[in-house]
Image (cartoon, rainbow over all chains, first blue to last red):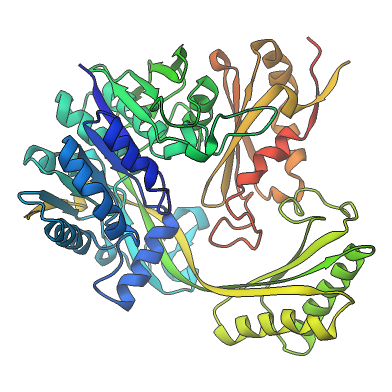
Length: 444
Length: 106
């Protein structure tokens, strides 16, 4: 008998309806909602500072309201890091949702200990910048250690139906139920590596079932509209089949699996998590049947001694505005508009912040990589961006871009502008001994 | 000589961690892998990234799966939290490599 694990979200804003379909039709043992990235964590801390009752995933209640009745009906356990910067409140909200639905006896565990803000000071080292926290010159809003599968096992052993964490490492959310089910020891490095590969393949949801993959004419994917989340059927040795529901759209083949195996991986022999130094370099990837890919021979070595910590800083705001030009000479008019905005921001308003002007339709995403003038276009959007710690400067940028409608080159239209909060993140490392974790169980 | 854009014979995916971009490139057909391995070097990748690359490139090879993994340090204009590029993750940057021409003759 294999363990069947599904993915219900691969990032904070991932789709909900395919998760519900997977719980209903997937014959799953567990479903994992992976919803934390460096950015979402930093924003979680900002939300919690503004309101101590916030800081968890914004869609938590909507998701739980739809997911809990189905999970209870089909006996599927839920593991998620939707707690983000406030796991206890996320658990309380989950219990409240369950009670409002009349679900009785649901055991909701939350895990704490990843928040290590009290261990971070102005002189904490940041290796990547060859400096310390105070060198960043921005206020720290939070610090979280990546915790591993170890932190989740006691809650699984206590019979939790729902487990909510903060900054648990993404693959560990999947490794924990595998360890619980098969009784794998933490120093069984080979299985830790194999289970980590399963987690790593599954953690981005549809990135292994045809999402972030489809390229018409080269990599065709059937029915991307109804793309399904993945299922892993995992054996006791850690080998697995990655598949999807037959009734869902998408594609699981050796290409989708290979692309995802190295997604955000640097050295394939050394993928570091709190659980293991995983080695994907000898993985076998074989198409067993349509939409069924077998993975085997992933392995691992001893875990890293230090845990990675994400440091979140207040990054001020990102201001963006744009105006469009069309028809003959559109590119030249957009270039002139860019020059007007930049010069006025410097000369009239005295701003020193870096301003970037892109000509969408001519040169934007690849403007830095491909130096020189792009092709002329008759449909061009000027996009101006600036990061600043000063709200007034951000508003001034948008004002200047909008003023192009009357004051700028001919035929400029369609101004839009937005100012959004920005965060800055860095990484440091900490001894695992100083990051004790614990769980608490709430029951409806 | 049979020049093709890399997209004709390979597929790729970009990922990001901080200011580091990693891009894996995979041959559709194993017969093209030796040409890719010979021509898609670290210098080749650095040239493709142009001024985007402020750090260095390291290439890892997975011969049995016919794949190459390129890791570009300081290559995301500050990364998703610092970049003013509309694509701060560099998700589109796999197509920088796929847009390069290589000689696919065996």
